[in-house]
Image (cartoon, rainbow, N blue to C red; front, side):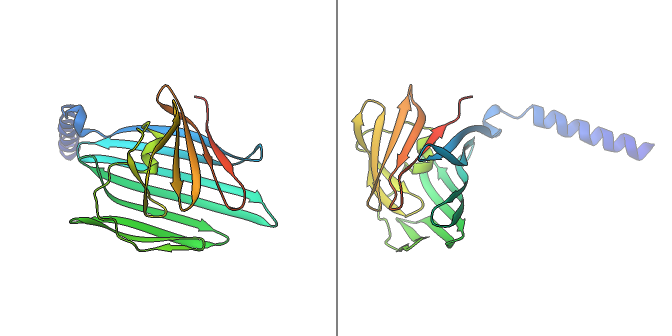
Length: 206
């Protein structure tokens, strides 16, 4: 009985300590859900997550896609990006598919980014010699500004934001043009150019 009382007292102290933590020490998380649409058909789901902490911000993009194109195509995509003091520090992208499994890493190293980017029929090890403060994962939570420099975590390539009209922005990634559509600062749709067939990502109404 005495042991149980001691355990209860310890748990009570822990709970009190946690309750007294400032709100900035607790991670604040946002999640947005999207459908992936090809030729009018939903072929997969995507979830974008932003986690703000006292040390920085974490972003995660996770999607699964299955469709038929001269055979069944399956792709699971997981992208993570970590920011500290507003700057991208590291990012990883894992793509698992029936066309192969690929990994891309981007890591800040003193005064540049080391890049080892791999995807289907693509490889890039060109370093980036400038700090970056915006990436594609952030676009799911932040409307960009024209002229900002963005990095595609998957390809490890910087590109510039072009504003086509109010709330519509375009970026070029590895020769493909992608358009991001916002309403009242919230991303509603992404139209992605692809060598096989263009597709879109559409936000699910909450």
